[in-house]
Length: 321
Ligand code: NAD
Image (cartoon, rainbow, N blue to C red; front, side, top):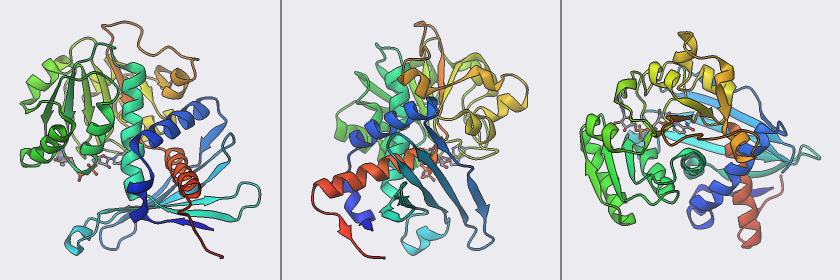
């Protein structure tokens, strides 16, 4: 069995490796050659923790496995990351455990890859201003991945906790793109692409505020009850997602579905756009919205990439189990 520890990932795997792996698996999902198994997520009644599994199988790459982990809100008091994740990969021919891969950084990478993929396929080619809503752990990764997809000239950002924005500004400075913390109305009136990555339970952006031609990547809503944008905005946009089943149950689309404003058939899996069986943006004035819910196959795809890179660079740790 191969072990790729958490502390080896940053040297081994790049955002661009994850982008390629996730783009491929999204296409396989749309072709139905890769599928996610039902998600398990439980409040365990200890340390206020949420624990669960995301799993699946990709028949094209033979990636089979699960990501286990969750959210331990008191970890920060112990100097640990609140989100804890690990991926187990199994040999699809024998069922033997093939690899164990630290997946904290990989989770941020695969989530950032998803929104960047949506920008590649759905944003206007002439998008110049990137709007960031959110400034937590994931936001910095989202920003880094997004800027490689268009010639962004400016970043405008808003966060519910404004004191967190300087951290995002530092990332923008490192990348070399001018950054401005703004009020929400300025963000929505100036941004061509908007990424939302918060843990909000109430809509932050209203339908009336969004300009024609905007692309939104709504990445924060991954649980029943969370919401980042007004359901009327969801209803007005052309909708894309990683997986429809998750979008309507735990994603941003859940509220518009519950209010009868949209139907499941209104949501296009981005893999169909990637593989060319569906049209992405069809006009410069269209509002496109990607509901990124985060699927287990993304985790398996990036963990498999980490194993392949560890093997090719001769740094894989082999143990007998
Ligand atoms: P974090 O705790 O580091 O940051 C939380 C962010 O949400 C901050 O910007 C904070 O200011 C903001 N926020 C907190 N309370 C808010 C409120 N009431 N209203 C508006 N904003 C509020 O979290 P993170 O790790 O950056 O994750 C952000 C979100 O992304 C979470 O909801 C997380 O579950 C989700 N997530 C989604 C995926 C996916 O695949 N779609 C993957 C990982 C994380």
